[in-house]
Image 1 (cartoon, rainbow, N blue to C red):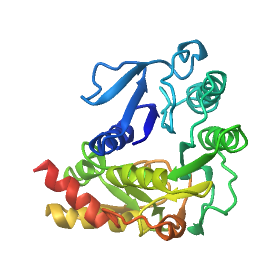
Image 2 (image 1 turned 45 degrees about the horizontal axis):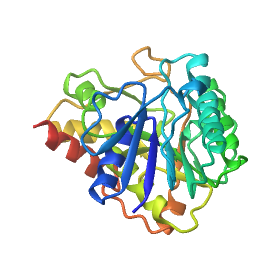
Image 3 (image 1 turned 180 degrees about the horizontal axis):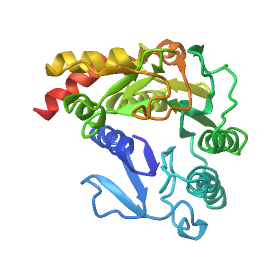
Image 4 (image 1 turned 180 degrees about the vertical axis):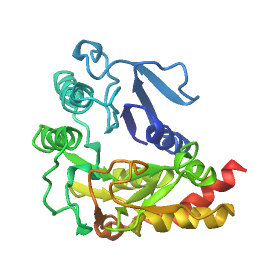
Length: 284
């Protein structure tokens, strides 16, 4: 059984930790406050942004998952969470003599800046035009050029239990969508995030980069209309591209998961239909 550190034990980390503990792995959860950690997760109280708090990591770690999230939405929070935090952890592991088999860094499809519905994969150009994507890309390079074997996982939009904003916007009639140009979206259910990470951990030689998205990029309006149909709610309105009711978006692309599927991973929720149906069933 493996000895696993989840650094940044949050929404996806909790799902991953649960499934690893069920398989009898030793799992440590690192976060600033550990009172809410479930039974079976070994707590580490630390702040990834503060190198001095990372002085006592558990020995003989086999796998590390870096899954931090920023504490706010501005530039400094993103740099601390991704660039500084990852650098601090890598330095601490190195100083303490750890030699994990592999470190996984949870990144995002925001490292891509394509805006015309282009298809992208792990080899596509990464030229983010916002600081969030730039800091994620910098952190990816820090890991992949560092002293440990590393793999980057670029997740699309994560949804799942308790993340019901989109559903509620349809239910209450607030949802709108942009008819032209089409707005493509890429999603992955939380449980597939956890399942994918566990799957990659078990591979002997995983690739350096994977796209973590489901099997069907979906036009935003199609998703909203499908949810409305299941709820029996009025169909959401189509609006102009500059309508103030639209949420701001920084990309418009279609992501391929061919590399992940070729590695042998089987999705629990291959499209948004299966995934949102499960969320809706949990809400009833």
